[in-house]
Each structure stands twice: as C-alpha cells, then as structure tokens.
Image 1: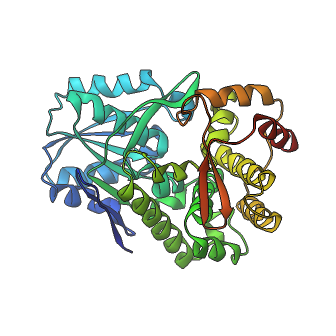
Image 2: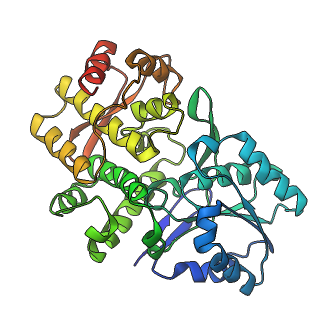
Length: 363
C-alpha cells in the first residue's frame, strides 16, 4: 500500500498505509528525529486491543513512553478530557521536543491534537487512527479541537501531525456500527471529488460491514480517500476556500449531533443524514437531478446508514443551531451542495424555508 504525502508550505508529512504498520510505529517515528519523551493517548477499549503493541514498538525504538487513557465517546470530547492530557504532560515533564501520539478514533485524535497544539504553544503530534472514519478523514489535515455544549468543534486549532500511520489490520476489531460510520466519510469523497470511487462502491453488493468488502476494495477506499483529503488540504491548509468542500454533509450533521447530545447517533451517522439533506437541498435548488440524488441515497443505505432524522428532534432547533456552525459567515450559513457525482459547490444562498421543507421530509 502507498505512502501519500501531504505537501504544505509550513511542514509536509506522510500518510503511511500498510498492514503491520503498528509494529513499525517506533521505527518510523525515530526517523523523524523527535524528542525522546512520548505521551500516548488512547481509550481503554482501543488500548486493550493495540496499546501493548504500540508501546512496545516505541520502547524498542528508544522512546520514553507514558500513557493517558480517556473515556470513550463524543460526549467526552471536551476541555475536561483535554485537561487530563495536560496533567499527564506536566506530570511527565513533556518538553517542546516531545511528542503526543493519538491511538484511537477521531475523538482521541482531535483531543490529542488540540492538546499538542496548545501544550507549550505546540509540540509534536503523531496520528495512529484505529477506525475507518479516522483513517480516511479525521487523522489527516491538522484540524484539532473539542466540542462546546452549544456546538461541535467550536474550540480548536490547526496543528498538523508529523506522521499519520495507518494499519488496516486494526479494522478487524472495529464494531460494525463504527465501520458504517466511516463509510459515510468515504461516500462523501465519492460525491465531492472522486466519481470513480463512487462507482466502485456502487458496483459492490454490500458496504455495511468489513467482511463484505474485498481486500482490494478496502485498499482502494483507504488510498483514494486519503489521497483526496491530502490533495484538498495541500491546496488549502486552513479552509480559506476549497477545503470547505470537505464539510459536505457536516452542516446539518453537526447540528443533529449537538442536539442529540452526541449520544444517540455517532458522527458518521450524522454526516449521512446531512448528506441526504444536502442532496435534497441541491435538488430543490435545481443544482442536480433526481437520478443523482437517488444514486446518492442508495449508496448511503447500502452502507447500512440511516437517511432520516432521529425521532423527536425539533426541526426549528436544527435551523437555530445552524447559526452557531463554524462555517457561518456574516450571519449566513454556508452549505456544500452537489452539482453532480464527483463535484460540489459552496453557497450561502439556501433559503431557510427550503431547509425546513427538506428536514420535514426527512422526519
């Protein structure tokens, strides 16, 4: 499997994808000439599966390793949890040359990255994603942060990792629901960037669990998704323009996540709902056709993802929540809407009444 480079003006880094990479973590980090002290951040579930292997690899490469285990779940992605990372960093005297390693999914990666961005005004950071969603999306691009009670990822910083190390073998222990959540982000890349990837997934009988996919399709999904993210981030590191297309499905998705307390649905499920809504908005604005929308929805359903709003959620509350989204500019909500499979546009001209109509259709 390939090594994909994220080329940035400040500092470029590699996304290394290969089975067995976890055992090579220490070796690959040693080549980057990082400081000796490493703080590995994970959660008990992931650490129980892979912590010993990661720590052994780091120790064998000569690193001085300590660990910090945080509670698992989006509801714990907050400043209180980041404070626990700071406590461990202080206790173990992490220095400016030291490194934080995130071993886990997007929640662990975002919090560890934010802690690394803000500890001593910025130290080294390595991503070792263990979920499909974090492999193809959250671990790449340097967005770090935590949630505020009024909105998702409102507190954060851009802080690029020194390395993203992906071992596809760790997906063998990923729960089915988490695999499906990751597929939402993969489908996103098909819609916004990669028609061929979309069509390869269309040709697959099932997308709802890992064993249903051939090894070659898994390789394609990882490589093409990471390449798409790397291409976009390399062109627009801090979301001045093009990078905003990566938010496809996330505008309404983030509102739904926030209003359900990050408990009843996960991030990928919320993105799936947001993508269906975005497709319906595009249809209502004559940006694309009903056939494209039907193909879009069918692929989301093939991945085992929901296409309707959670029961009991207030539509007006969703519309109000959109105003706190990070992408609001001059009071106008910016949406990423599809124009064809493989292409999208960014607009702040979506009528509020159309948003309400689409959400009602999705109840």
